[in-house]
Length: 103
Image 1: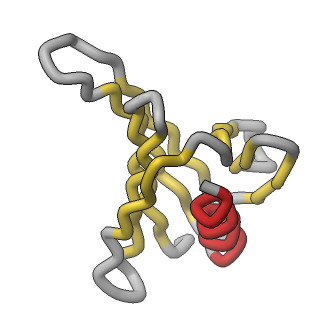
Image 2: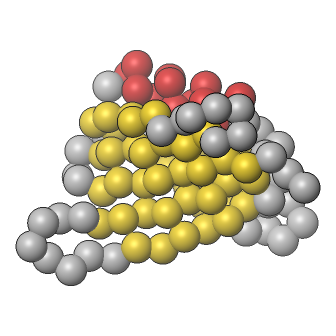
């Protein structure tokens, strides 16, 4: 589990300053879940005890992700300009993250 946390932190730090689009999905089979999306421009990455915060300094928008309880990180990256991953947590929540070059 610690390896997944370190991998996630390294990934986020590597892409600091880019645009982040985060979608959380509750895909528990047979039930209706929830989802939301958060788009952050020119992301600032903050590593705190137990979580990673991705914030936008101009607007104050942010989202936080726990950096523990990570079951699996699935890399969907297909090239320099197509960077994405899914973080699957032990509680069955999944967060899909896409990274975009800022305009």
